[in-house]
Image 1: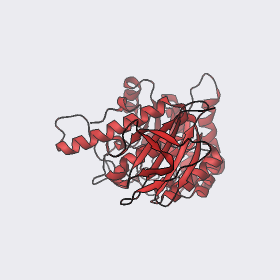
Image 2 (image 1 turned 180 degrees about the vertical axis):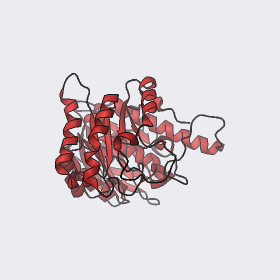
Image 3 (image 1 turned 45 degrees about the horizontal axis):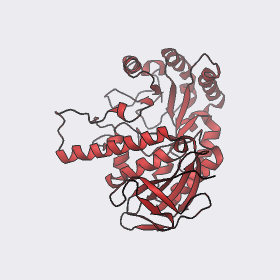
Image 4 (image 1 turned 90 degrees about the vertical axis):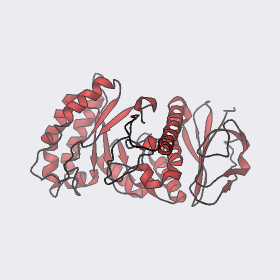
Length: 364
């Protein structure tokens, strides 16, 4: 069902591939925990040339405490593991609970930063990325973790709020502090689960549109592009285009619809500079809806309008010196708005659980 070459995949994050469910003991060395990745990484490098590989090297990835009870001794053991995988050619590392490691062993964590970031300073060496994951949700807490840990990107629970007002405030606060170079946006994840299970099927496309149009780096879990749901665990089996998959016709059609929409929006993002690098300008926000515009230099501009409410249609009166009176529909997550339809921005109706992308040209 899913073909990653069709959705403009640029990076791969590798999580655990073992099936055992018991947490590891503190005595296990970081350098031996991930030996089972070796063959998988080599296969990915061979088959997906040009795609970056980021390794989840969280020491206690199956336990509740990602750095065990003694974070200091765990960080000490980390250097040899990093050196090993840097030598194998991985493009970066991801760690859960980064704030605990940086707080418990600040000088040792700085050594980790230096080890990874020094790889990016030489022209001859390819860039390596350090990604952190935190459970914090408030913008102030996220900013504090970013400042303290020195990670390049930080995945958070900040967009999991059910209030559009909270989402808009989070985006505004983080964007005003960091621009977009250090911002990463996600809803699901290895521990939290898949996007469809967290937001519900009705809001899957809306979530695609949000994540793929915010300033920064969108991050998705495997299977999010087809609306894969969690089952007994948070790591359900991926669904591929296999006739042996025991799926109903309606389920196959639903997943295909999700994939096509995801592909279309991700392709648009990859081609349009306003969506890649553009400035972010908020136009409207309330408890159930938000709207913003992305613009870059003299390129085409894009307005994104989102309504999270499950029952009520909202009418947005979008007026700003930076936008015209009318704009053209590019994408709509549901019926009712046709592609290339020209809409009045002062009376923009957005149906329940609907997202709309519109465009308008640059005018000097």
